[in-house]
Image (cartoon, rainbow, N blue to C red; front, top):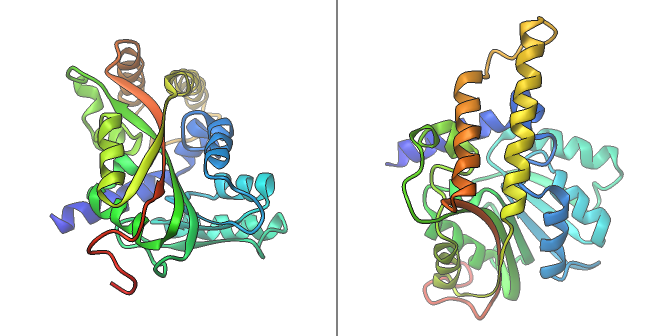
Length: 274
C-alpha cells in the first residue's frame, strides 16, 4: 500500500507540474481562485507576524498572494520538486524571499518542527492525500496551541459518480476521493482541531469546470491547427471528465466547501517531539 500511495503522490505532482495543467487551470489550481484564498486568509486571521503553512502549495500562487495581501510569513510544502523550485524563484522575483519560502515534503510527514505555525491552509488537496487521518494529525502536530486550520476542498454528496470520474486524472482534479464535508470536519476533529466554520462554495466548482471546458475546446482547436503541442492531454478523456463533473455538481453529487477550525490543545498521542 505504501508503494501505491507513493506512486499516486508522485504522479499527481508530475501532472500538476505540467504545461497542460497550467494551460487549463492557470496559476491557481483550485476552484474559486484568489477570492476563496482570501476568504480562508480572513478566517485564519492572517496578519503581519503570523506564520502560515501552505500544504500542497504548488507553484506558490496562493502563498505569495496571502503574503502580499495580509503581510504574513509563509512556508509552502509541496511534493513536486519542480513546483518548489519555481515557487522559490517567484518569491525572489517578487521581493518576498525574506517572508516566503517553499520546501519539498509530504503532507502525511511534514518536514516541519512541532508547534511551528500559527495557521495552516490547504486548498483542493486534502482529498488527494491517501492517508487523510495522518495528514490531519500532521496539521495538529505542527500547529501551535490555538492555531487555526482552513481547508477548501471538493465534497461528495449522495449517489454514484459517473465512471469517467473514477480515474487518476480525476484524482488529480480532486474528484476520485472526494468526501462528504462532514468527513473532512471529522478528520480535523479527530486530530484535536475544533471545527467552527463550514461554508458551501459550490459556485466555485461550477465556474472552474466551465472554464476548463472552454479552455479544452480552445486548446483542441489550437492543437488541430498545429499552433501548440500538448501530447500529455487526452482530449476525449478530459472533456468526458469535465462534462461528468458538471453534471455531478448540478445533481448535488459533487460540491465545494470551506472547512475551518482551531486547535483545542495538543491532541492525545501527538506531543512535542513525538
